[in-house]
Amino acid sequence: MVYEYEGKTEKEAIELAANELGLERDQFDVEILETQKTSIFKKGYVKIRVHADDVVEKVAPEFDGAMPKVKSKLFADPLPKDEFEKQLIDFVASTIRKMGYEVTVDVMFREDKKIGIRLNSPNSSILIGKKGKNLDALQLLANVYAGRLGGEEVRVILDSENYRIRREESLVRLAYTTADKVRMSRNSILLEPMNPFERRLIHTTLNDIGDVETKSEGEGLYKQVRVLYKGVR
Image (cartoon, rainbow, N blue to C red):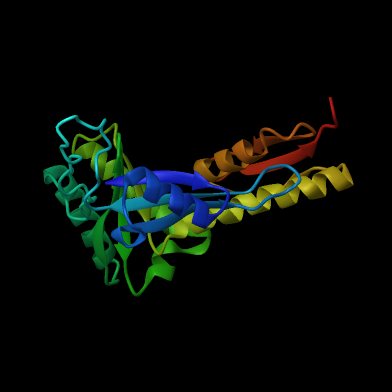
């Protein structure tokens, strides 16, 4: 089973997960989803994703002294669980191999109307491409194919070597650094072209900063975000 927790530090988040799940530290795997350092705008935090096997279900104590119930294997299976996932994974793997690159493909996570697919390849840097554009292109193909399989409402996320997480952390840092520059110079700054998800991350990160605003400029999929100083209101 997959769970997400947040704490001021990685240690605090892990301790919270262990306490909530009733597990020892060596009974679950931890994936760092997001790290935010303390700044003048935001308090720092660390968000983690926990992959656990047997999880003790916390229930009210019974008078007969019954032991807490234990849920059977809840670990997110990396193998396809149905025909839709099998065909999707086969399509992604086949497409990449036809490009001339070795790859193995498995399920990274499952959420409501969303599935994460992991690409494991010695050529990961090529599959990711500059600023993740090759990965975005493969992800677009995967989503189109998922629609043809009848999964129009399912969003497919492709990742390799945790690029998505590393990119998000980089963009959050970029957003705060740019906001600092804008506040000091009182001028606007136009950021590099980004896909819709990346632009939304910039907008969301700076949304609560009162004297700075953002807007998207340009045409097509890869637009640019302009960060502007608007003063204290």
